Amino acid sequence: MATEDVSARFQELDAWGDLDILKALYEGQLAAVAAIATSLPAIAEAVAAAVPRLEAGGRLIYAGAGTSGRIGVQDGAELTPTFDWPEERLGFAIAGGDEAILHAVENAEDSVDDGTEAMRRINIGPNDVVIGLAASGRTPYTLAAIGEAKARGALTLGIANNRGSALLRTADLGILIETGEEVVAGSTRMKAGTAQKIVLNLFSTLLMIRMGRVYRGLMVHMRATNAKLRHRAAEMVDMITGCGIEAAARHLDRARGDVKRAALLASGADIALAETLLARHRGNLRLAFVDLSAGATDKAPAASRAAP
Image (cartoon, rainbow, N blue to C red; front, side, top):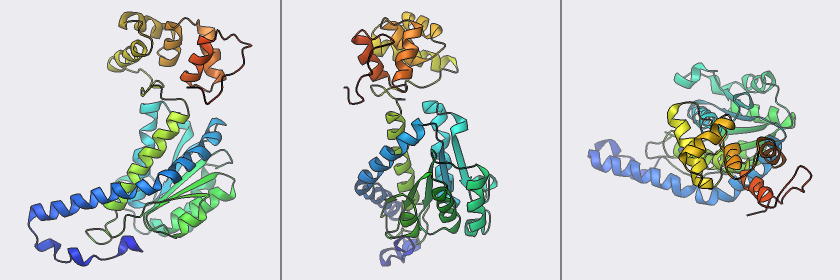
């Protein structure tokens, strides 16, 4: 495996000066970022495949062991506060259980039975999307989880850092990030881990955009749960409609803190029409505005998804 190779360049690393070591580590991180460029088409394909499942009510599940498992938790945990993704539609299968998020659990990644059982326990189904992460691409726990999820009809995505690895072959869609050897041989928390986190950042953000949770670069699906966020929500409504902060705050009150509904109210819709338009377009505010500007009614035809 390339991720386990020993580089002749770094064999005397511990004898180097501090700045030279840091420069080598820094260059490794830059190389990890650069390696993602060739993965972009696969990430786009994965998002396109995931959207219909999630629009049908499916869940987003992250599966992994060790560093890869923790990276999955970090990405998924941010989706609820950032995009108001429902907690009940988010899940994690981590080798060793919740304890492994903070502490290493010996031999947990080798358990095929635990990986299979994790998918059975959360009753994975055809609308679910399961993301398996493993730098090596051959972690038994992760392979078993992906295999069981695939057998149950879920969409399975594999993210690995070694070409031709079992995870990439087993998953419905594989995302290869060829980060190669590490500065500290085998320390895949470094280049491989950095690349995995960036890939998940890209995947989940594009996914949320395609799920209608971003409009004009704004987090319009955010829930305003405190004073700071309520002010931010009012600013977003004002930026979108130009109605002014005070008016935006009033519309937000009428919309019970929902930025999308408030923006439609500020643009002339009433509550019933705002809810109809958003329901018609699965929460996509851009398409709701297209209908609103066309004088949409309850019987108006839905606008094309390709509308600007």
